[in-house]
Amino acid sequence: MKRVIPSDVLEMIDKNQRFLLISHRKPDGDAVGSTIALGKILKQCGKEVEYYLDLPLEERLDFFEESNFFNKLSGKAPDVYVSLDCSTLDYAHKPPNFDEKIPILVIDHHISNSGYGDANDIRHLSATGELIEGYLSKLGVEPDEEILDALYTAISTDTGSFQFSNVGANTHYSVAHLYEKKSDFSHLAKRLHLVKSYNQMKLLGEAIHSLRLEEEGLIAYVVLDYETIETFGGYVNITDDIANIGSNVRDCVLAVTLKEKEPGWYKVSLRTGSKSGLNVAEFAKKHGGGGHLQAAGFDYRDSIEDLKKQVYAFYQTRSLNEK
Ligand SMILES: [Mn+2]
Image 1 (cartoon, protein in one colour):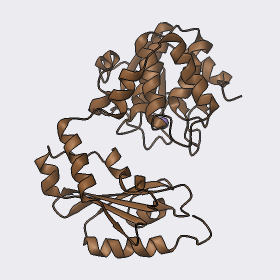
Image 2: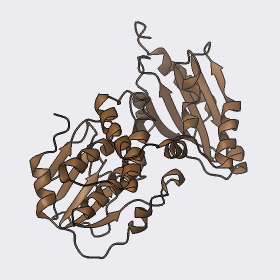
Image 3: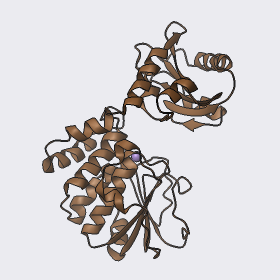
Image 4: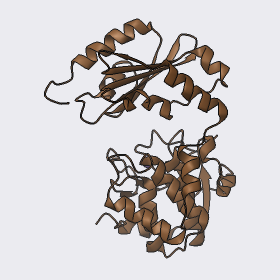
């Protein structure tokens, strides 16, 4: 059932010629990978494809030859916009003179997606790339190595290298299809999940060094101050593995990471486990941020001591019968 592509989606692809592919702001591996894979699949079907993405790409994602075609818009209006991995149209990175009268095809895996397209393929799989993998056989496309790498990138990044709870048998079936065409993705997996610049590696070390446990090890704090960040290149990635350091400490329930982006201005990330009974998105929302049950973030400009008091009060709200 999950592998069924809606017939009106296939019809929209079949009956149109010019496609403009878009995705969400700050594109992640799934956004970039599923966009490139679908773009090349459509080209193999004889379609004209243009891309409009929010650039620059993260360094680890910036290696696809197909990305040379990104944002080279001809100015001709497309027949169809394709929105990939984007749960709302507000969150999409739309091209200049985006025309609301042109039909939209939505392909996405977010459960919160309301189906804002004129045709929608929304299935709650691990990654949009997992949906796109199913288009290969349906459209009779033989994938080249770049399509395989793009789909692997999409699925591998959105599943945290197949470690998140969104992984299912269907995920592994999809990836098995990729391995039937290419035997070794280890080099790509390393690039996506392990390789860092020297500065980012040193910042990871500094972050681990700053780790402190409070409340008998149940709450962890990691703080990267402005000076340290500046020493190692001045670049802070808010979604990197630094935010997970505290939550990977045994028995830690709540991890708080502060990155001082500008003097006195912190990017705060919160992480908790699926069984903690805490909803960190709620806490982040109170501070003007947002996120998921187990991972959320917000900007913060007051004293760290004050924040710690609020974090502790929040921690105490966790239900006593869950652990
Ligand atoms: Mn995704």
